[in-house]
Image (cartoon, rainbow, N blue to C red):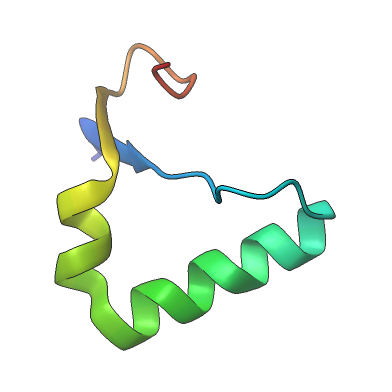
Length: 51
């Protein structure tokens, strides 16, 4: 079964890709509900993050 909904969130500052992933991981681990409340939600058939 494939996921039908995804979430995308981007940091306010430009960082190296590894740092972005680490920041996203820490944010999700420490306060997942708050992160998902701010994240952009997208349908699986649109794999890119909405603007």
